[in-house]
Length: 161
View (cartoon, rainbow, N blue to C red):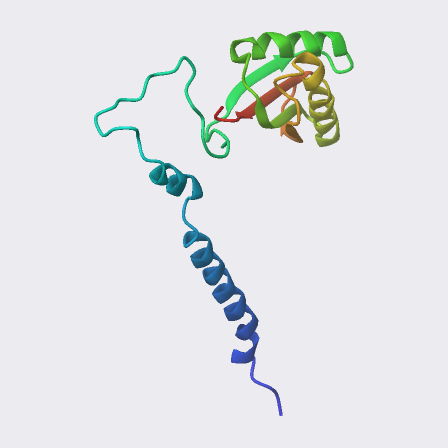
């Protein structure tokens, strides 16, 4: 005699995993914001006193990453490290003083291997081009189909401060 194709017991693992996910989300949502409770606990000197504006804004809480990347592109021959570095400095100049959280680089080439290699070469020169901007930044190399070699599309996700 053949066993039925559908066995409800097979769904038990998925049900358990889904329930565990819901419980984890509920637990994380119940934690609250520790910085908000600290700010509420500090009373001001007087109810009518206004805080004095400072020259630099006070930053509290953890840094976040911007939702939208800064998109730039460079053109330089593969292997020409000086030219790649020069182009990276030029396209990132408007963003001096910011720090990158992570960078996605898409090397254009008809061959996926060569495109990925070019993206890796570009990413390896980011810290040389702008050491302060790309310090501790995570990079990822990708291939993007295209007929021309020596072109990279770069998406830089900066920290909010």
